[in-house]
Image 1 (cartoon, rainbow, N blue to C red):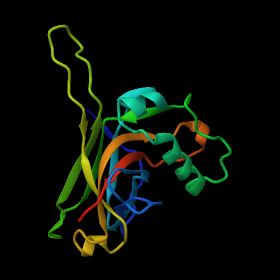
Image 2 (cartoon, one colour):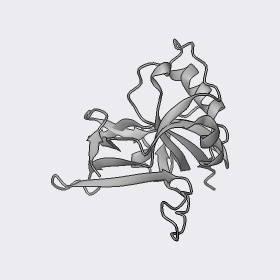
Image 3 (cartoon, rainbow, N blue to C red):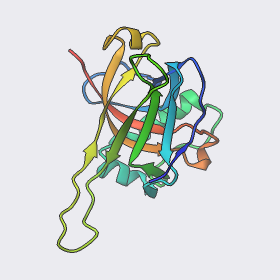
Image 4 (cartoon, rainbow, N blue to C red):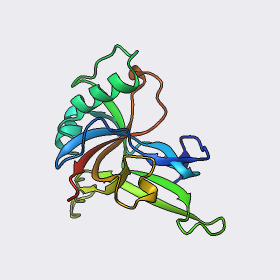
Length: 188
């Protein structure tokens, strides 16, 4: 599989999510997968989406993104208020099974790089007779809520299950960052 660096590299940034709500068990949110790190981070998407033109109803049932439309509406109102198009059940999105984040090694020695791959994939039916279906797979991710979260361990961070990785359709305007629909878990 070939990967393309779909975004840009910028120094002095860290991976974060833009949050509108206080995370609690089963709270859902649309998170912008953006670059913000104390060091240089790169985000890579596969060159082609895993699934093209996925309907909202499929995102809700197969991916478990039950509040997809309200979350997308909140995101658009906050980040693209000039867009007058309202998301609805007939919208379709290109969906990715995985995204890769590459960043400098945590030890800070030399030029070594680390990477994490985050996956989100619903149950898949077998492509050939006699094969078993592939079970659903939704990774969890630690999402920074503050710029200081990286320095404070888990304080200032939230754990979320990634349900859908996608890009906005052109009808919603120019927005190059991939987005993720996530379900937050409360840390006690």
